[in-house]
Image (cartoon, rainbow, N blue to C red; front, side):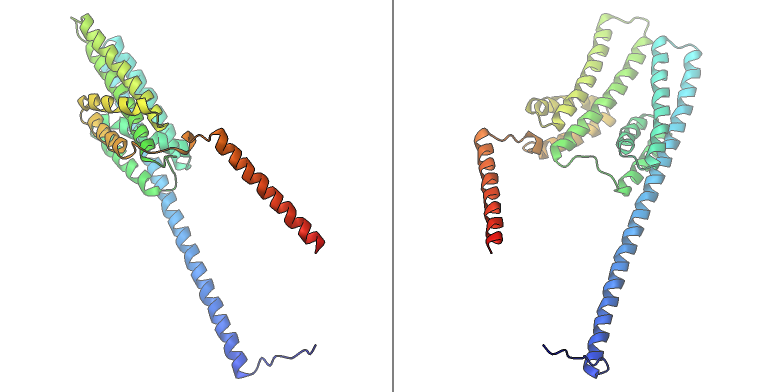
Amino acid sequence: MVNQLVDLESPKNKDFIENNNDEKNVNNNSEKQVINKTVESVDKRMLNIEKAGLGVKILGVANIIYSIILTYAVSSGGVWQDGLIVLVIIFLSIFTYITGSKIKKNINWAKKTGIALCIISFANFPVGFVISIISLYYLARSRTWKLDIDTDIEKAGLAVKILGVTNIIYSLLIFSFLGKKKDLDNIDLLIAIAIIFLSIFTYITGFKIKKNINWAKKTGIALCIISFANFPVGFVISMISLYYLKRGWNDVLVENIEITEEENDKLSGNNELNDHNNITQEEDKKIK
């Protein structure tokens, strides 16, 4: 065997080395550009998350101020139903502020909860409505999180669940209004109870739609049509729910796919065959 010395000073080898170094520099620059763009993208997203969190915290403060005004109004001559509504609003307001703090820390459950709280705060018009829109805008721009929904039927289920929450708030307002009536009769009371029941049932139906249960999808259509009466919030969410129900009616969720015993035996047979082939290959290597 003969060792040959390479002449690094020859023009041919010099050109080769220079070209190779140029390629390495280009590759390094490309990698640096990709890393810089990624860092800039992450920075922008995190900045949007912080803005969204700040927006939800401000929304919580605005709702707390709104609840204090309601408390004063109730103490000036309201009834016990008004006091119950005020307590619910105070709780939601404080919870909204806490959720905003968690959103700023990029916690996933807080971002999901923030969507529902922003939609509920549409009722605090115009201040709560404007702040909610801004918060939802920055949440959407962040794109650093997922709702854990991949199919249209799961989106439909989420929309129906949100519809149920808004209907519960709406039913509480109706209950408060009926409490002020001096000539309250049994029919009014039955209507209030029916609305509360339908609202809770709507939320449960949305949960079942996310699991792609057939009866829930059919029931969801009827509940969305009934919720048109909750204008404009219920109407808009109902239209979104019906849109995704139509698109995802035939969606199949992975968790709903069942494997028969025959298919399981085939899969087991394939695994045994693969194990046998692997053992045979190892034995062949040892022989060689």
